[in-house]
Image (tube, rainbow, N blue to C red; front, side):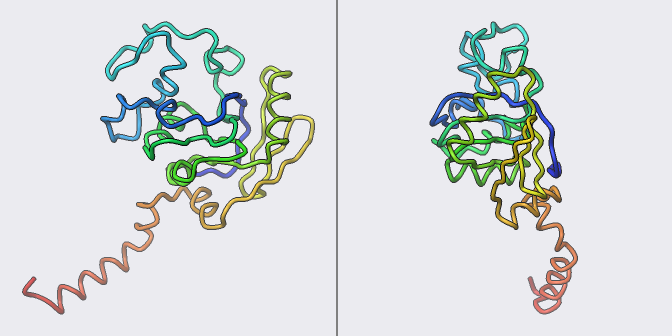
Length: 210
C-alpha cells in the first residue's frame, strides 16, 4: 500500500452521524475482491439519482446535485470530515477500499466503528479522532471557505488549519509505523521472508518424508 507521511488536501464535509458501511459501498458491489475500482460507487445511493449495479457506466448516470461530493468546490478532496460513529454496520473491507479508490487518504471524525477503524490502517487510510468540538469547528470553517485545505503530518501527529490552528491527534505507534512505511499485513510478512525460508528449509530437512 502507499505510504502516508504528510498530506495537504481539500476537505469534504459529510455532515451525517452513524454512516454505515452499506452507505459507503452498497452490498451489490461486494462481488469483487480486487481492492480497486470501487471509487465510482462510493456513497452510491446518495451520489446518484438511480440505483447502481455492478457494470453500469457511471458516467451516464444522473448525479444527485445536493450530495456533497458532487459539488464543484469539493472536487479532488482527499480529506473526509465526518460525524460520530463513522463506518458502523458490517465489517466489509470494501468500505476503505472505496474511500481510498475515490481519492481520500484521511478521515476526521469524533469516533469510528472499531472494525472499520482497524481496516483503514490496513489499507493506507488514516482515521483521525478529534473531540466533537474540534470537529464542529472544522465543519464551520469548511462551510465558510471554498477550497478549504488541511495539512496533516503523521510524523508529528498534527493537523494544521489555514489560520494556523493546530490540532494534535493520537495514533498507536505500530499503526503509525506501518502507514509511514506503506506496510499492510502482506508487507509485514515479507519483511521476514528470509526467516520464513530458513524455517521451511530446516523443517523439510528434519522431516524429509513430508
